[in-house]
Image 1 (tube, rainbow, N blue to C red):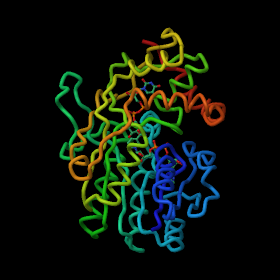
Image 2: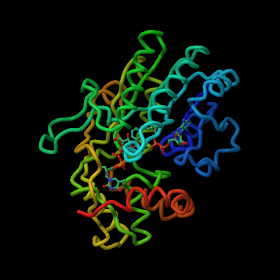
Image 3: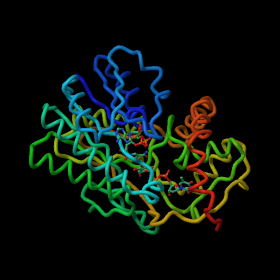
Image 4: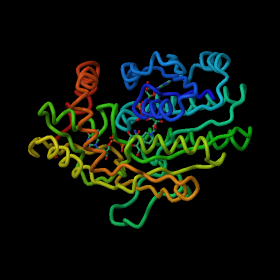
Length: 342
Ligand code: NAD
Ligand code: DAU
């Protein structure tokens, strides 16, 4: 079994590679990654020389490079994590999101059509469903919830999902799609809420909460997401969408206060800054289908997962300090430098 994992030098893709190498040591895993600002080769250093693992630096939009890799590897499956993934960046500059997230998906599926695969899996997001109101806790996203996007990022991911379903119907490509809620855990790039707050708190820097911080996300430990994708690849039904979520809704402000408590830092570091444009209020996944059909349930309680995550950032300062000391500085200044306080 050979699986091409795209975006495997990023947060979830790398965790998925570790999961697959541990649970399916007989598989060949080929990581295809462009190494954008979000891809980090040092994340994969422990598996780089492992037999059965190969890393290839390439852009999923580069048709020639992708087809060449398929020619060489003749993969059985493709799992597509490669994407521009940060909502704030998509608001600043949507174009690369359209290119990678939509056109890149099409190139990968064209290669799958040409060389033949048993499964193409698209890693999508709950953001394709838009948002839910705070005062209706009874409402959850199901697989039947209409697509209703808010940001250029979520619109690009929804476009890719539509394209995947079209390739399945038109060409009979054996596809599945998973739509997961917010992940957290090791190797999470420090532009995202949880790792950004941990890194800033450790450096006694302000903790920039957008608006009042009442927005709710449904947090899932990354290993639980990886286990769900593994199950979908092996037991999921072709042509189906599976929602993945932790039944773990939390307001941003409560997460930031929790991080302060865990690190022994004062809440006075919290700074309320100008809100994100078009900011989605609440995400909440109903994972009943994947539970019913594949027996999946989240295993990591948030209280344990967040402690494990904080410990990981404390023990891997080299990993994130290298990131925040480089190009990230310019990003941070651009995104937060002129952001007014509220
Ligand atoms: P990430 O930004 O940490 O990693 C993305 C990876 O893709 C990086 O290694 C980057 O180098 C690579 N990449 C980007 N453009 C590429 C291109 N053109 N060609 C090849 N490689 C390219 O992202 P993540 O948080 O790990 O998310 C992975 C996937 O999961 C994305 O598709 C995202 O939409 C989806 N997702 C993320 C979350 C979350 O909470 N992080 C939740 C649900 C779904
Ligand atoms: O729901 C799944 C999605 O989760 C994925 O598809 C995306 O790839 C992933 O980035 C994530 O999107 P969010 O926008 O929810 O994540 P982010 O970490 O950027 O923000 C989480 C919440 O925290 C959101 O309400 C905005 C807020 N926030 C974020 C940052 C970076 C702040 O208050 N301050 C910040 O500095």
